Image (cartoon, rainbow, N blue to C red):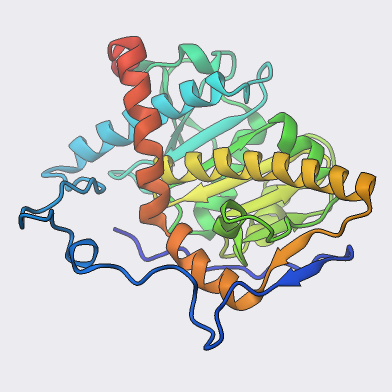
Length: 304
C-alpha cells in the first residue's frame, strides 16, 4: 500500500478556549497499557484474531473491480446520510491500471442508484474513456488537480453536506475538543478563496495547495473535501468530518449560550491520540461496516 498520509498543521483556533490536560503526573496517557492478548492479536486460548485489512490482489484487474465496487458503495452510503443534493457532489478513485485516470459518478445519477456499471472513467484531461454520460465539471477540476498533486491519494470525496456547509462559513479549522476530531489533528486545511462553482484547473490546484499533505480541507462557503489511500478511507473521513462539524456547531452554540468555555484536548494528548485514530488503515477499517450494510440492504445489486 501507499505510504501513510502526512499531516498538515492547521492554524490555531482564534476563539477563547480552555485546555484540559488528560495525562497523569508522569505525562503518560491515561489509556490502559495493552494486555498481552491485545498486543499480539490472539484470543485467550491462543488463536489468531481475524483482523480485516485491505486485500491483496493477484491482478490489477481484480483491484480495479474492488475499487469500483467500493466506490459505488460509497455513493450509496452518502445518499443514506443525506449528502446528496441534485447534481452536486462527487467521489473519485484512481484506476490501478491507468494511474492518471480516475473513476467517478455520472453527472445526473442519484447517489442511491449508482452501480459499478454506471461509473465513468476519465483521464487527467477530462476525456471520457469509458462511459457515455458527462461528468461534473467541478469534479474534474478538483479531482484531477488533487490526483496530480498527491500521488499517495487514490480517492477524493466532496459533497454539500449540511453540517459541513454550515461550518464552512466560518472559514476556520475544527477545534480539537473531541476524540473524533483528533482524526483531523494537524491534518486538515481551509480554503478561503471562494469563487463560486469550481470550473478551471487553476482553482483545483489552489484547493490542492490548501489541502497540502492532509486528509481533508474545508472549502469556505462551500463544503468539505476529504482524501485517502482508498475510497473507503476517504469516504469515512468525510462521514466523520461532517459529524465533527455537527458537534462543533452544537458545542459552540452551547458555549455561547451558557457562557461556559469549551475545554480543548491538550497538544500532547492530541498528538498521541491522533496516531491511534487517524491512520489510513483505521479509516479503511471504519468504512467496512458501511460497505457490508450496503451489500446486505441491496443483496449486492450495486456490484453489477
